[in-house]
Length: 395
Length: 181
Image (cartoon, rainbow over all chains, first blue to last red; front, side, top):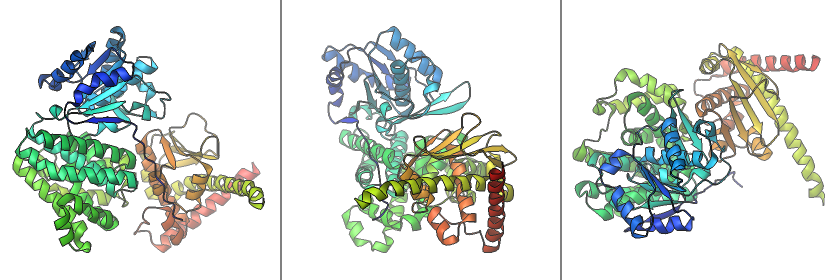
């Protein structure tokens, strides 16, 4: 008997499709919540994305008690404390986070404070500190990439100490994730591309890294198929709501996959590059993905070859000899990146970003080596290896 | 009937084995930090006074080492002088036994959720590299390959033998000193 073993957990109710937002009042009533607070950012409000949510609630006689729309891109413990104070003052009883990764993480952190008490969220940092269910919490993602609506982690910056605090607990997961195509319909092309490639990377790494398992594989493969099929369609026709829904669902599915099987070197390099060069996460994912797959190639030839079916479809899969499928998968991803570059100049190399210097590569490599996700990369990575991958990604 | 009688004995044997391995590993961590430049380089990035623990949940065997500066570790046995900074915790004795008897690689054990990290993950990653380096030195290549994700290509037999001899000598000396004390 092999030592094979895995764990899989996702208790989030997924509410997806046309008029999904109109399910929010019913879901909140089922959780005995009557006084919801919305946590979001100015961009979401300015894009008019709150309007359909508020309308959906009002039509069901549910009043939104408070709206906090000033979540910054890099949320902090101070912001969390301020929002919690408003929540308490207004006697809210539930949270609806609407936005991308930052708004969702902020919603999770606020939920810790308003449920557990106190003003300092930093004392709940770490794994397994929270031991009981929190207040009713719904998430409405407005980007299709992070998968934060189905992950049990939040990252908040402690401004005083200048460090990022991770919070990990299954109780951070929302009661429901509401996926409505209206929420991503106005995403600009370069964000659509970068976030979709973020979802693609979550799925590809989930499928090829060490903690892969049969259940996460199923979600990852389906997510890859959806992104491959719909991304360019949406780029060419941004108002394609069916395509938008496909990408949003892919993001959630990839989120479920990677939160149960972790990610690898693409994320290690991406986290380090984001921290040092302030590049968006999705862009880093798209940039590093083929170079890391080439590095890992001989350890992931089997699963990477399988992905060709989902990346290119049955005809090309069948026509490609089994021994060449892994390379063909990498080529398919490169082809997709080239198409995105043509449409919105999503950078394919570090040089193309214009924000990274060659002198920074050593620092990126060193930082990447200490990133937690490197533990799950299928191939061991030394400083020299990381530097070599970065050099290939340079130009 | 026989199985029922054997089971507690097997469990006790596992417990003793894990305790012994932790004692050897703790002393070996101290020793390898005294003889290997690579390990010293890794350890130097840790704060002075940094306490690292490996343990079996909930109250099982444990090993605690401290970074005393200059890339050197000091083995504290199973009791920490203060709260530890990073703890790698096996969820069950059986999981610790699988790893410490080289039936499951440390990296696979992480991937299989056999253990969890409490504390700064980046330090845990660094300590895992140190443990891998140690295992590559002190275990025969055929066994080390079962313990680490990838056996280091640049670790050649003369260096391995010399370093292993130094580490085992230091471990034995430490055991004797502990017994005398």
